[in-house]
Amino acid sequence: MIKLLFVLLIIIIILLIFWKKNKEINNYKKSNFYKTLLIIIIIGGILFFLATSGRFMLPQIMKIIKFLPLISKLIGI
Image (cartoon, rainbow, N blue to C red; front, side, top):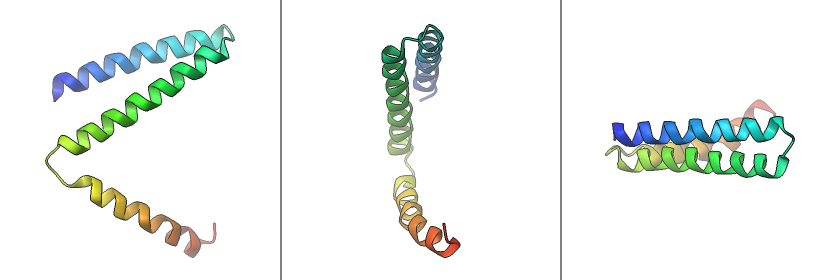
């Protein structure tokens, strides 16, 4: 798991470098592609670690997400 975490961090750092470089030279099409790819890799990595951690954290997160609309109605947002 630690090795996978290091690989994901290295990939994320590389994509961040590419994203910033394309953003600086005003190449927005590639910049948006790298940003989207970066978000997909981060979300996929988080879901993978949640699924393989051996704990049932994903159902707990889903319970919290179910209560968010109720909380926002109570606050009045």
